[in-house]
Length: 304
Image 1: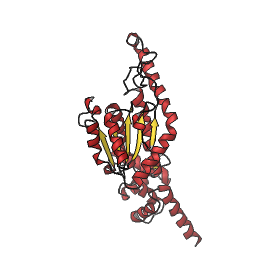
Image 2: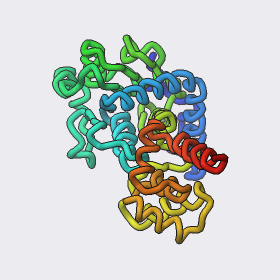
Image 3: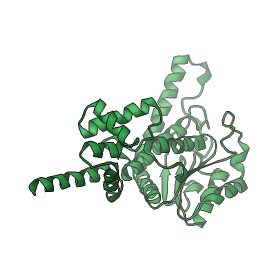
């Protein structure tokens, strides 16, 4: 039996290959559900990490995701969805992946053992950045090397691992421990461990986005509407937030040059797109604050 939780054998795995398919799937599903529960205990650490991410992006730094294998793919997926979902500029996000992402149809294991590769890839990190390092074991040499470089350079460091006492946690500003149970297929951390990692990343990046004003009443108000489905979604957001019809909302969205926030403010009475953008600038790009200022100004005019 391995002393590492992510390598340990599941208590119900004996004879797994002899079970009926529905029994195997039930056991696999149960394993995923048990892994998901591990995130509950990590909520305070995820909240601290979201503060670090939000502060970094607010001050002009970059968000750097680092990992290898399955954990690295989970991190990369979160990173690549931020520009489209929340309008975060792609140049504010970087992905460091052991062996690069150019051959993701096959994940060779060798690069994750290469600490020198990690140090070389971490050359892009500077003190203004926040680096999120993820490793199921918490001891992957490539990822640990990046974390060490990040700390030496004064960057904020978020570490995510599934084993208590992981080396990756040493010196981290936020240490997110996801104590998932042994995998039904021992050591296959693309299963339960990765499920917990995915949930944690979803929570972390979403909370950071909320703090930065990218979410209003559950709407992704900074989405990049670059296809018809997303343009229709954006118009529905404008309609719901501004309390107007879909066709009117779509017209305002066009006038706003594809900005949901600007369209909402135009519908609420902003003089023009430039005035709406000025309201957003004064509110720190938070739509609720901009709406509040606009409404206060209109009330003041009525009293006068």
